[in-house]
Each structure stands twice: as C-alpha cells, then as structure tokens.
Image (cartoon, helix red, strand yellow):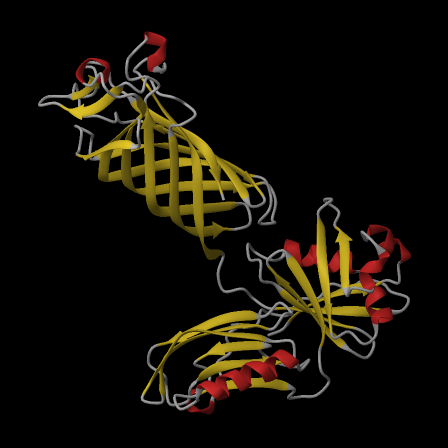
Amino acid sequence: MKNIIKISMIVCFGLFSQMASASGWNTDTLKVIQANGEMVKIILNNIQDKEEVKAFNLKKIVESISENSQGSNDEEVLVTGKNTTYMIKQSGDYYYLSELSKKSNDRYVVQIFETTSRAELEEIKEIAAKRGIDIKYENLEIINGKIDAITLKVDCNDGYSGTASTTNMPESGIGFIRDYSANADAHFQMGKIFGNGNNENVDGDWKKEMKEGFDTAFNEEKIVRKKKSSFINYDHEIDFSMGLNNYLNDNNQFPDSDNKDFSLDPLTSWTYGIHSNHIVSAGHYVKFNFQFGLLWNNFALADNRYQFTKGAEQLLLNDTEVSRPDISPTRSKLNITYLNFNLVPMFHFGKSSNAFRIGAGPYGSYRIASKSKFKYNDNGKDVVKNNFHINNWKYGIKAQVGWKGVDLFATYDLSPIFIEDRGPEAQYPLRAISFGVIF
C-alpha cells in the first residue's frame, strides 16, 4: 500500500537564501543547503512550470528523503502539486526532479530479441538518445546472425539507470521500460521483464499508508515513498596505490640507526599495487572494503655496492668493491611480488560518498615472485630470480584515511620478511612498513 506523508508546500523566499546561486534555474540545477550544512544538487528534468517547483519546500523534502533512506542512496518520492505530479529521485550524491505524465500509460519501451541486428541496435540507441536516454552495449556476441550474449547499460539521466546481461537470450528478449506516468507502479524496470506478457515490478512492495499533516495557505505536497528491499548495498571499484617502503627491526628502529649494510634508501624503495575493491555498505556510515589484488614491494639499498645474493643458510650481501672492483654500481634492490587481500572497515563522517572517512583492518599476502636487481656502469644489469629465504606468507595491519576520491594508507607487517635467522643478519628480524596514496 502506498505510504503517504503530507508536507506543506510553502511559498518561501527564504528558500532562495539557501541556494548557492539563483542562476541555478537557468542551468536547470538547484543547490539546496540542508540544516546540517551539507549542500545537495537537484537536477531539473522536463519541468514546465518552474514557478510551482519554486514553491515547494525542497529543503524539507530532501531532508525527509535523507532521514528515511534506510542506508540506501537510491530513494525516490512522488510530490503532487496543484495540477502536476513530480518525481524526486535520489541517485548517489544527486537528486533528480522530473515532471510525470498525466497519461495513464506513458511508457518508453526497448525490447531486444535474439534476432535483433547490429543496425537495429544502433537505431535503438539513436532513438533513445533523442529522448535523453543513453544506451551502451558491451560483451556483444552475434553468432550466425543471432545475439548469443549481450550486456545492456542504460542511463535515463533522471536518476534511473541499470545494467542487464544475458548469455542465453530468452524468447521474449531483454530490455527496459521507463514509465513516465504519475500512477505507475514501477517507473523503471530492466532485464528479462517481458516473459509471459507480465512485467515484473522490480521496485518491490509498497509500504503501508502513513499520514502527517501540516497547515498551508496555498496547497500541499503529497510524498509517496517506496520500500527499499535491503539495508545492505554493494559497490565495486579498481584501486591503484603507490607509496614508499622501509623495514624496521624488533625495536621498531630503522637498520641505519645500527649502521647496517642493508639499510635502505627511503626515497627509492617503492611500493605499488592494483586491487579489485568490493565495497559492502551497512548504512551510510559503515562500509567494508574487501580488496583483492597484486602488491609489489621494492627494497633499494642505500649503499649500492652491496648486491643481494642467496647463501645456503641466509641472505648475503656481496661487497662488489671487493669481488668486482672493475664496476661502478648505481643501484641494488630486492623486488617482491605478492598476491594480496585486505579487509578494511571504513567509517564515513557523512552520507555523501565524498565524506571524510577513516578505517583500519588486517591483510594477508602470499609471495608469488621475487628477484634481485643490480645495476652498474655502461648499462650493466644483473637480475636474479630466487626466493632469497623470504617467507611465503606475510600478514599485518593496514590503516586508511580518505576524503573525496583520494585515500592515504599505511601498512605494518606483523610477520618478518625473511625466514627466521635467514635474513641478512641472524637474530635481526625485519618487518616491512609502507605508506602512500590510493587513487
């Protein structure tokens, strides 16, 4: 059943004092400041009577959506004015305000069949673009003139978007329906929705009716809210990281404090990685980052004359001034490649995805490659692939802090880099530390 909340529609010039600029109406974009000081953008779509929209208490409506979103950034409400019904759709960090049709069945339907040709797909795409709907086709496979696989991506540019894929095209095809009618049960459906002539309602059941009245001298706004199916949300992104490496002894000191030959050059010892980040959100403020990927650690010696070599019982540093006096070393380093997994819960100080965030969690890595690289004059280079008595497994703690699209990280290995007493010096375990930036 429809959940109806009544909120007064107040013609309030004070609303304009909360907008970033009055010119927003010319660009069909509103900027509204909420009570908590956070600014949101409302993108106007197909609005005929902007004077009526100006009379809406948009600040109250946006705050109502935010309070009732139940952890989802995909909330929508219907707002009924004097003669027109509008849809306010939250999608990510933006709100879209669209005018709905008074017709009972004002729908735009795209249906793709197994026999749809490439030319017809392009025609569908072009016609949809004229209505402001962007369509993309990916993973398209046509065998013997029939579609065997396709991924359909749709963005209606009004807050509604989606992706549908199939590797076994049903007889009824796949596609989407964008219903602009004010009385529509589902304003957007996508996927295998044409089977047996019945369209599935992908928006779920309606909540029970609830009313809250306010006095008004002009009219009233009627908000219809739909139930969200889940408190948990999922997202995915690819992260690139880059930073600096070093290692510490048991006293959490750098080896150069003990004048060790294996002290590192802190500015040329790099770490970098690429991870597939799977984000599970439990509400607006807590997000669990499950990160799988590859991690590279490079340890460059401060004194280039020493070369990493593997001895029978431990890692050795060969003094080339003695063993190879005819060369002039320029760089000596040890490279280790890991298959890496991080679990980092992040706490966000705001509902926006760009809000300040902080978190920490464990990680584990498995060594899949390692090599030493020794460079000297006349472009000479020695590269040796070996395990160098390095532990195959390592684990530690990762801390992360971010704002907008950039995060800073720091990691500390709880396990030593080398097998016990097999590092460059016996009874002198080394643990790696790293810090840097994530894009």
